[in-house]
Length: 147
Image (cartoon, rainbow, N blue to C red):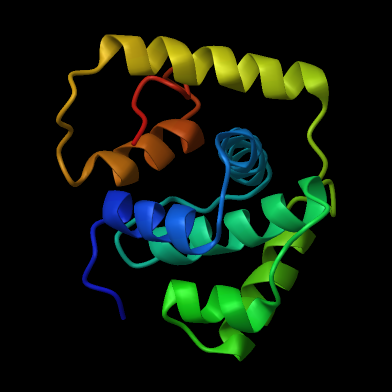
């Protein structure tokens, strides 16, 4: 079990998984899709696994080059079996709709950019969990709070 904040864990995944900003935007589209289709509420117990699963799916669906799941397991500090299970469950939850259209990408990119312009440089460590909760919330703009 990781002791990193959700934001710290996301930074770890970003570096270790060799994510790009384009893939990050795609990952946020997939997380948004996941929360729209499930009753899951992000919390400190599941946020790390949701970030890992969405990263693996985003990379594999939207990139020609990706690592093996054993590499992502190492980066995510979990077993290979857990990564395999997380990937399967995430894909099932989004009905295997893992691609991101240009329109979805541009919309998410604009929301992320607007949020980034409104935020101070230094952000609190718990902001990632709040960001994912905002993505899940139906009563608030899903991009109100982000990492």
